[in-house]
Image (cartoon, rainbow, N blue to C red; front, side, top):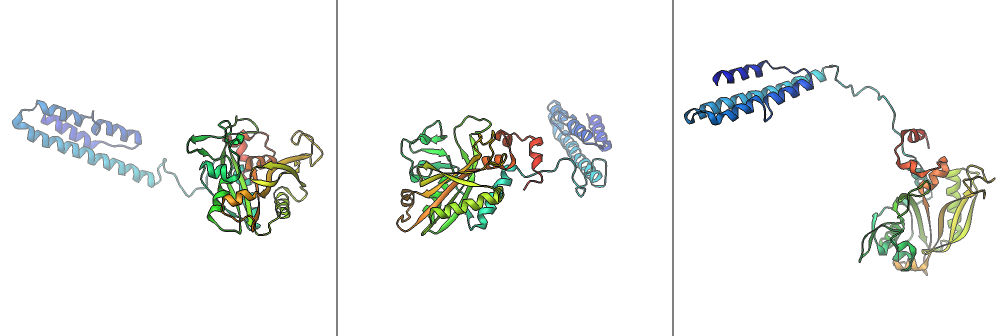
Length: 340
């Protein structure tokens, strides 16, 4: 047995490892549970009791020698790597391969935020998991409104209702609850609706809503703000129109259309040969919403608007299928390396 211990010690002392594979082979042979050192510990039970202590001490010396050698081999490999071996990576060299790019949705979202910031709007944020009051009730949604049903909304809990927000209007409610007018803010963020995924719809998408509340805010302020926005984002030749519409939280309400960016008003498949494409909804904040949030509707008025970032991006870059935004296809994403 003494000869076996000495033989293992010699093997440990002479061991070398010039690669990671050789280092791993050493670890398996001398360090692992099924190593030759482990076999020595298994043989300890066959040693007479009066010799076990001395033999155990010898095995521990072998174990310590194996571990010390293993650490020495690790340090030796690291030294070789840092001194310029073939495996060394020079972090000062310029990168190779595909350069990264900003996602088109982030490009457009950044452009929109920048335009409204120049108009004095700040950026507000809020939770994506919301209660019924902030998402529906405070915004003047009646109890039987279709948006409350399971086919439109992802409910997490019932009684009390907790859900994935269906719009970033919940941030408007929180802003009005926690602040005193005047305030101007936009609310970018993800929203969730129970919709079948297709070229024109997705269950997760991005919105940017806006809110301006102050004394004497009028529909003329809303129109001029959105006129400026459309021309800044899509170009000075862009035309804009307002169509009467209905939303529970605004009165009066209007859909916002811009002249088609492909046919420039002549008519094509994108605009369904009308020359116009819808980009957003808007309106004057309903007095009930102001009162729900503790704001005196006799003193203050306000306007609100909301748009889908995917929709704006489709129009700006002529993307015909919004599923491309989430497929991580390099052929699609690399087109936006120099987009602005």
